[in-house]
Image (cartoon, rainbow, N blue to C red; front, top):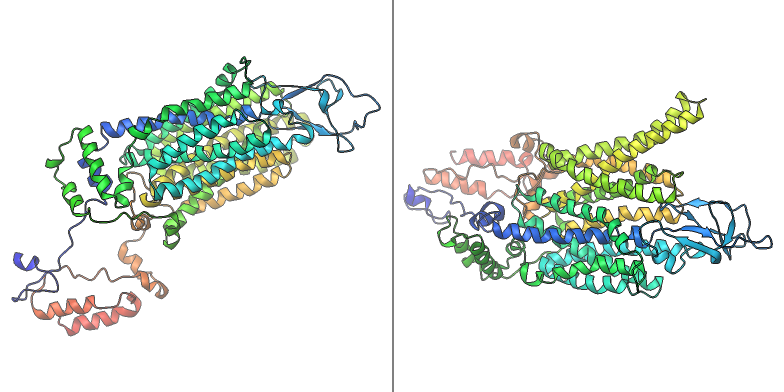
Length: 636
């Protein structure tokens, strides 16, 4: 019997005993279950590298929130009032922008701008003294007088960083899959220093906006490569906690940014905004030694069949983790030696189109991140008090958003631990939808039916409810965005993880882009904007039920792993096969045929051969009778 089991199926023994041999399972594709445990698991080497990915998160937080200070709207004071014989029309309305300062209005003839200060005097834009209330005494707006008919250039400057980030996520994600995570990381650091420092020496707003585009491009590549490397270094039990530490550091950069701006105020010899730009870019010099300190991702090397480089790295990791690879029980290195002749096979994100389930999961997460960041601006806009003073409005709104980000990170840890990734994402999306719908509908009902006569009390209640719902909505939408990005990093296979994560992050960038677009149009269409994103939250709630639960699961490595990483069905496998339609016959393979059983007699071998020869395109509905007749004819 034992001798018969060792034979192949196409060479049965003469005595008629046979068994269909199972192929020996490979160890290299099981990185979380076999390769990393044989090298010490989440050992000293991996922990040191994860710490190295945390340090730049603080600097990235500085750069991402620098627009609040470099492009802050100033508060204007009239130096010399307009005379009666000027071309100004006193009926021009005053517009307030989210930055806290009133927007400057064009004159009646459209050629000259004017401004109305708090006293009510009208003055020409040339006779206007601009004062900042955000820590700096001078920024880009006050440097080049981007007011009145030049105010639109401020919005272009805000677009440049976000649009550069969107292109950076898309391009650098593909490059990270094709050339590796380490080259993208190093190139992003080098060009970040070049373009980031060049921004500080801009001579006009056009040069400033152009260099900011490339700065955002490099910043996106840096953030994406660090995120992917951090995920791929960790075992399943450590992935979320290590990612959340980096999120806390980015929020810390947001909280420290006003203090950094205050330290750069009234710097001798340079404008304040130039000093601030140099201060937030210079710390990236500390990442230059990453060329030697940070290796390539072992997971990516194995998934793309860079086996020669993988062998060198595995020996180095085992040495640092103090593991003797010669005595490890899984024989991973022995299998690696047999695969050294294979050529590397990198994969592009375009291959995702040929999958059946993977592309749907990534599209759902793209819509989630777009909705989360898009509706976040709607809640932030509703929270602002138009009657507050500019200095109080600016600092209160900024610290409120930073505090909400801290609260979100604190709430995500226990929520994901209790409900999992999919349950947590679904819960926060439901809260976002409820806050949005209540803010859009409940406030109108209060004013229409409850307090139709007491207008003062009605307005006060509307304002309080609006602020409460806005804070809840900002909290939950920020959680949705953060968790959608992490969710994508877990369910996307290693061979296209950079491209898949780049798509989700680019979608988040489009969501953030809605804020300067609305400011450019003076908040016109704001209500419709909020309604559209509220409808998207309802759509996302339905689509989230289709996603799998990756908590505690190993990361998928190949496209085949990502395709089989699907939501668990409620039906048993046998019941699910019975529900397959005739049109789905190509997916109904005859895997349930008991070919693995040891049989006696040549007739049974012939029956097994006949069953195996059934075309795979037959469905159970059309081929079941034929298979049964063949089995009966052979005496099964």
